Length: 116
Image (cartoon, rainbow, N blue to C red; front, side, top):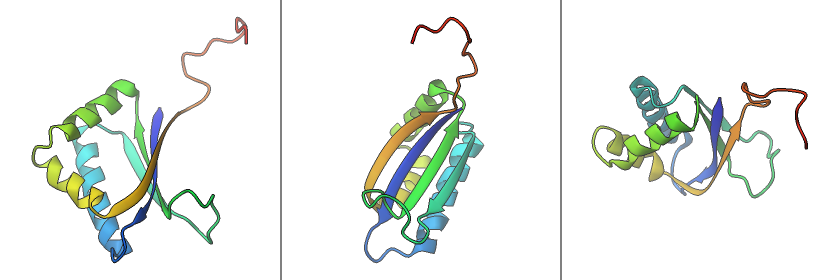
């Protein structure tokens, strides 16, 4: 499983539940379309995170980079119905940073022949 991460803040004046409603709708559409496997949205608690990371954090799970590429390609069409959902989320956030992680060890990993 590959996990696409994003850390961000809400733009000034955006309500947290307003954002949650938009984000849930967007993620549910991506999941229903089959271009993601699952997702989570979390919020910093007690300020316990590095200061350069935003107040909010999302994780989107995909089976592999092919599925992630399908998700990106579908959103990149900028066509309805996904365009409105993407806009409704993207227009509410700023200071966003992304990362891509994977489950480890990889399911294809063989042991005993590693050289490093």
